[in-house]
Length: 375
Image 1 (cartoon, one colour):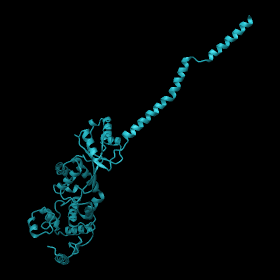
Image 2 (tube, helix red, strand yellow):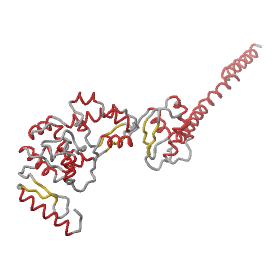
Image 3 (cartoon, one colour):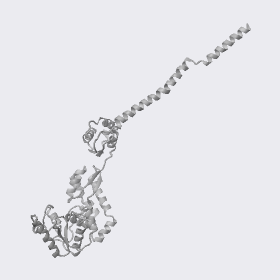
Image 4 (tube, helix red, strand yellow):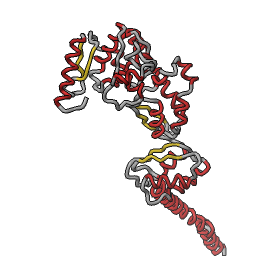
């Protein structure tokens, strides 16, 4: 009996060992779930990321198919719909739905920013939306030359900027800034130096004026002021004479020579006798010849340099930088007379004596007759 009990005990103990090694049913289920979670969750995450990436690339980073760089002008009262229509029209786009959706996420309709925005080929919807929302304007390269009056300048600027010509003109003619800079009613035009300026499209007239004032002060540095003193003129007088020189010749290589001639006349007290000043006094720059009656008619005008010695009170045009530099660095010679060359090249024949000048003039008039040109 003892032996039987021991055998039974042994069997029982073996059964206990088997029971200990076997896992409960609940533990098996948990392990399966853990294994499933280990592989399925990352897979779902990857799939989600791929979907988001695909969506982002297709919807956000996709280009708007703009064929060439275009400018979109946005006013402060424009609605989001109006801006989208401008973008669509300027870029010749079929649809702006994707751009509209991005602008909606930016709440752009409550943050429309006035300005000029340049859109370029290859730009994504997101980038265009960011440019519009952030007000990232591209400045206008404002360029002007061959301008004679402030009215003309205001008109040209108004075609390149948002400000209208009347507002610009009123600002430019304000006496406060003239007095502060030491200009007169006649010579204040010297501050407007023909050049290329980077100005934001929606810049106010006052800030446009600020740009010109800063450019003027920068241009007239110590070296140029010293050069003006050496010539014996103020910066404003340099500008006035330069305006006459530029009206007298369109040959930039001849400008220093013409400048030297007029400086010689100023030194000896001889009237400048510059035909362009008579045209200015008459108010007609299309005149081909200056007649005695025109000189007599404008005799009371301070711009009549046949009747009055010295420089006129203001520039007869906005002289270019080349013309100004020709007066600052004039050619050194003794000429005091000039007339158009008989070869019709546009250059002048210079002379130191009246007799020599008359000979040059006779050659020119003979050339006119020979070519059947009315004098």
